[in-house]
Amino acid sequence: MFSEGAKDVLKELKKNQRELGNYLKYDFVTVQILQSILSEIGRTSKADEGYEGLIEDIVMIRHQLTHFSAKKASSYHTPKLKLLLAQLNNILYNSCFWLLRNKAFP
Image (cartoon, rainbow, N blue to C red; front, side, top):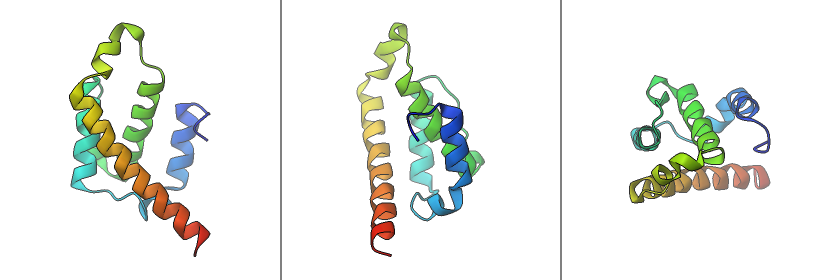
């Protein structure tokens, strides 16, 4: 799925947001991390609008990190951004782990 474009990824994640919500929680920490990441790269967050906004932010971050401009590369290599991305990666890793575990061992 992630080899597809951002619109296709967004569509699939929104289509499965009920199941996704069981593993990726909408909480203050996740919203703050997403808002901070997008602020660092000059984008606006939609996470405070609800769960769909959280999904849109994750897809936007994925898109921006995949297709960033070499002219703006230095803004993607700041220590703050690396720390925020590590925190987000940890949240997403744990969500994926529990999703896969519950699929394999229902």
